[in-house]
Amino acid sequence: MVKENLIRVRKQKKFSQQDVAEHLNISQTQYQRKEKGEASITDREWERIAGLLDVEVEEIKENSEPTNVMQNFDNSSGNFGNNTNYYYNVPDFLLESQKDYISLLKEENERLKTENRKLQEENETLKSQQN
Image (cartoon, rainbow, N blue to C red; front, side, top):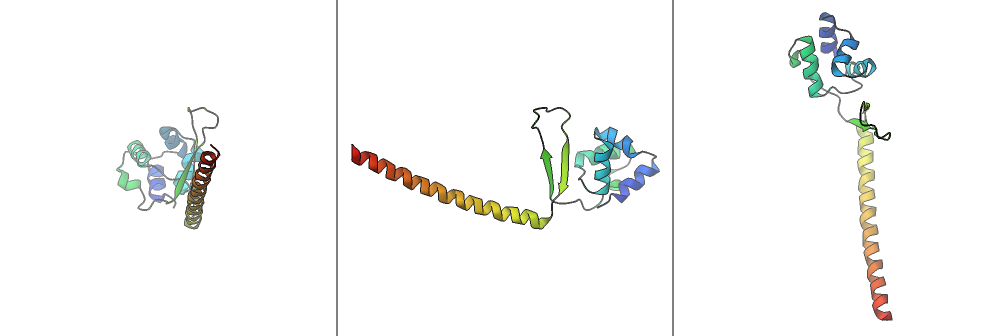
């Protein structure tokens, strides 16, 4: 959902996307995605933006935020400074599909644990018979 109230007030106050992005310590591209509704705006970011624009949060915040937003924290480089977060809107049907798959994996995991316990018991029985 495009943040129309935010865009309107930002332009009225003569702030660029770059100005707001710098205030939030993110890139202009990341901020642009937030205005377009492709990435969510956290409550803390809403407060900081409202402070910059000298308005109440309610004046710029839209009523409905995108749901099912997933954050990808990629620390594979081992560098925890300047970490970039990518936000993705995930369709409900994909989330449901993943939940179903997770349930199947949990069931399979329990089945394998049970099988493993039985094999261990059989192994212990065989060892005790050999002694």
